[in-house]
Length: 171
Image (cartoon, rainbow, N blue to C red; front, side, top):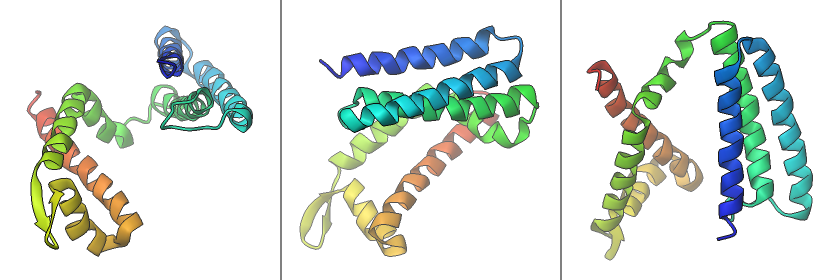
């Protein structure tokens, strides 16, 4: 129940950032305000993290402030490049995700739940298909740590390909 309060904070900060972009007529000024706000949140979150540790699993208020600050700085940079400087071409890859974001959210969740339910035999042990894929394909290719990264990146690419097809079919 207490985690709801920091979650509301995340939503409000995101809403504030969206409102700043939506209502501005001067994207350069908007970018400057967002970057100042973002760095302020990072500093406040860092200092608050010394008292109340930054913890994603608990979604602490220090985590919300720190990560919202990072997000605001990144958004400020993207707003500057895309809306102010009109540099749009390199970012079309992200537009593919944005056009069907709810679809990919649902389908990726269903995919993970499905491969967690499917049981396969690995070294005489019953493991989930998720664990099986990770241990038999990605760990041999890149080791435990980098295998995990490769596993995640391969899923992002896989879903991007599906979304790219949908994007081109105007779905």
